[in-house]
Amino acid sequence: MRILFFMAALFISSANAVPQQFLVFGDMPYTPIDEALLSAPNGRLYQAVQQTPHLFVAHVGDLKSGSLPCTDDLLQKNYSLLSHLTSSPLVYTPGDNDWTDCDRAALEPRFDELERLAYIRTHFAQSELTLPDYHRQKEQVENQAWRIDDVQYLTLHVVGTNNGRAQVLKSEPQAALAAAQKRDNNNMQWLASQLEAQVSAAVIFMQADIYEANNYGEPCTQELQQNCDALAPYRQHLDALAEQVAFPILLVHGDTSAFCFSQRESGLWHLNAPGDFRVLDIAKVRVQDSQKEPFEVSTVTQPLAKPGVIPQCTK
Image 1 (cartoon, one colour):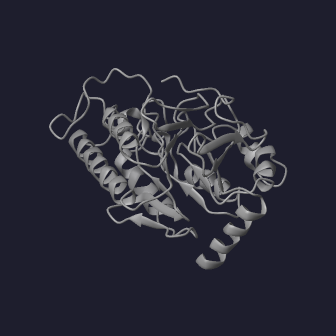
Image 2: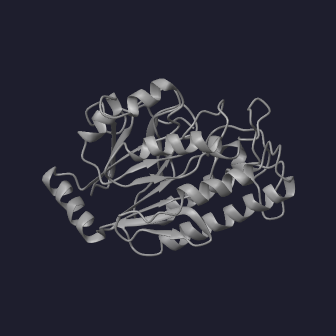
């Protein structure tokens, strides 16, 4: 099956003169409108996905609205909807709405966030996807990696709400902080291990908008784990990495409503994927052999646009 899929993927790429193309979105479905757009056979986004060549679809978390309780039934229903969007592999990385925010006072029922994290891992992070060289991190199974030709793809479990270090309302606070630190350690180890080999490009998927302004204070460290900015270490590390390596890196995330694409001063490419009420669409990303434009972005409902046509990220 793995070999057959890889041959099919190569055929799609060559037949459409696309080196590699994938689809990505997040923060959906939130509403019945979203559900209708994503549903077969008549949903506008469903039909657009069917008509768009792609090697895989990535969902960067928040498969439900934060205003809805995190019940088993809702999580399963929405994940099933996403899974039926394409016959190609669906890559999912968790979002804060899916577990960290499930303890909010306005929700009924409320859930212990660490219990919801265990549920996510058990039900949505066990399958082996039919992607070349696909594997999961043993210590953190929701972290995934695959390599198509010489392009490396990977997911990192980084979520909003200060990456699980803020608003811990039902879990034991020290247990939640320890779990957050363990995720950070695993993420950094996973990133380093997947970028060891020489590649022509790398694409990293996570949920959190690490560039969103916050008031959490100094960057979190091994010694400072509370009342600190848990996303700052990722901002710093990815910028430094982009400056050091000889190949382009694209960071793709969701979490906030802006749909934007641009290159940071460090050289890191940055895509805030569609979703979250504002842009009900799915991004189409083409990875190509070009130093000037290694990634091209549009949406499945619009023609391909060169960098600068999509709104530029300002953070």
